[in-house]
Length: 501
Image (tube, rainbow, N blue to C red; front, side, top):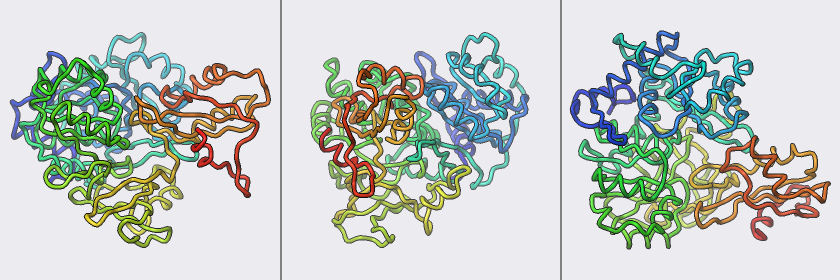
């Protein structure tokens, strides 16, 4: 097993040169061609001074350029910083500065944003755009400039591969540092779990900048020599069409996607005939949705669990053997999960405690945040902050989120982050945010506010927030209150708010 993402690609190129690495629309690219594209990207970046140890951000949606850029950056020994391209300029600026990104590869629509941020980004030397640009550097130019063969950098398994930003409870995102060993071992574990082979064709509609997609739909399949079926944006019709026309063998999605596919009237079990496995993660899949989906499409859906700090997968219901709906399954290969009390002692089976994880997939730490790192990594274990229980068979059930995280369509939203923005409004006296059930997205954001101005409306607040928060983080419901419920120490009681929400 290679502990280097570069080597995984090189080995698949050597074994499966003429097989399809990815399909995008009517474009099918072999592993040999992908390798050539990766070489061009790496060579092009190197002509601009990008090399080992540098950080390069990717602000792209699902497209071939993401795959090429991802492996091109790694080829140089640089680290990838994936960023959601729908983030606001404030969010983008924070991550680029915090990671000290030297270059960025972005969608053309972000050119005005990045240009306006230029003076605030001292380390950024190069911005490349994957389309028509006004004054920036075009992807086509980068690829044409990179015609020289460039050797893959000599990488140690502990060298930094990816920095994944996860929203922090303090309001500022934390950069989880993931090494080649972290990412590559998790890719292999996922490959082993799902029995991935070069015959597989994986529907890749999860956002590529999200770690779930990165491991399950990119790194895992590439290590196995499988084919990545790139779907730019989720729509039930596009997913069904891709499965049917490309004879896809695997689909990975979040509960929201399963819900929309279930409600889609334009598909039958016949469309899913080629699918041998469906994977669900990102949030809990309602058991009712799981059963109805399986009944409609005649496929098995296996649920699992992961988090950015663990590259991300730690548990999954096994491909063969016992599957327990509502459970996140058991340990995946090479990873150990445990449920402990506040002192780190394992609790008896069936009792609730905090889920902790150990394995080669666990992050090196948070970039520039030693205290946060010490709080999360203790005695070789990653403390997830999620409350769980384990049954007698070792199957894990997530009970609640210790960190009050809200999951909207598979994306993480932390209440504090939204509250920080609400508090910036001059009329807001107090604010608290909780997640409430949503039929389509699993959860949505609800804000409880106490304000000084009685004329303030929900629309006023949303307008104020929309330039400061990504769309999925915006409160969809706002309830105005005379005061927030508090305990004896003056702390807002979210539990009470959730109950009345």
